[in-house]
Length: 241
Ligand code: NAP
Image 1 (cartoon, rainbow, N blue to C red):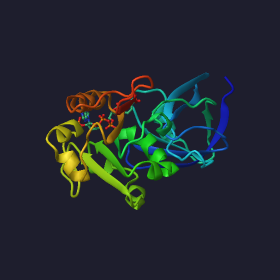
Image 2 (image 1 turned 90 degrees about the vertical axis):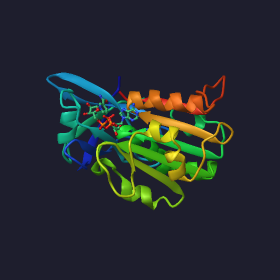
Image 3 (image 1 turned 135 degrees about the vertical axis):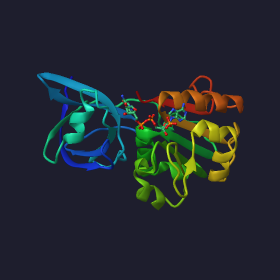
Image 4 (image 1 turned 60 degrees about the vertical axis):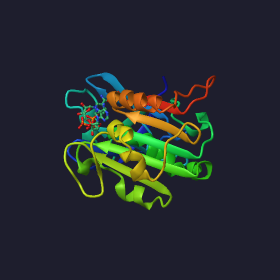
């Protein structure tokens, strides 16, 4: 594979474990919501993992949002990168968590936990979403309020209905608990000020595999079904790890 040579221009640390890397020098053609493999050479071997682009496709600076998996080979090293360091980027972005795959609807719900928010920020930044959907909701579930990253930017999207959740503490203006439970008992829709229904809603899910499973189960009980090209539905999912 012809890896592309990127150079880190910024590594922002949100917490000890959460970081956002900005990388220049790589011309990559992709659709908002897609991911690409990024890599470092470690002990003579190129170690790569998929990361979603956080930047909009027309931004030449790539951005990746990650968490340190302490026992993992790559993420602790990515977290330590500094401006000027090299980062290899694969030339072939991929993934179907993209607006072009989605049927039209009145409302788009982007539901994420943890680093699963990354592709949704790219979709919001890209801009086409605001013309395509009358209502756009971003749901982000994390353990602690300090992990509610990119909040200032999210609040600057004037049409966005942003619904943050924390599970391991209470925090002001944030829902407490897990996303599927709040979907089941109505708190999620109340917070967004919008109902979820098969006729009006498209749902994109990204994050913790258990959250994806549990949220889909509630949505299916509510009459929504998985979206496929040949059998259009309302639920589109990207598993992150
Ligand atoms: P997380 O543990 O998945 O937690 C994020 C949020 O998802 C938490 O609020 C958690 O709630 C919630 N959640 C978990 N299971 C759920 C379910 N069934 N339904 C609804 N919500 C659910 O992710 P994180 O805090 O971003 O990362 C923690 C660890 O995950 C990392 O240290 C790492 O080991 C692993 N991780 C690995 C990768 C990878 O690529 N290998 C990527 C990201 C994260 P609770 O607090 O109630 O559990």
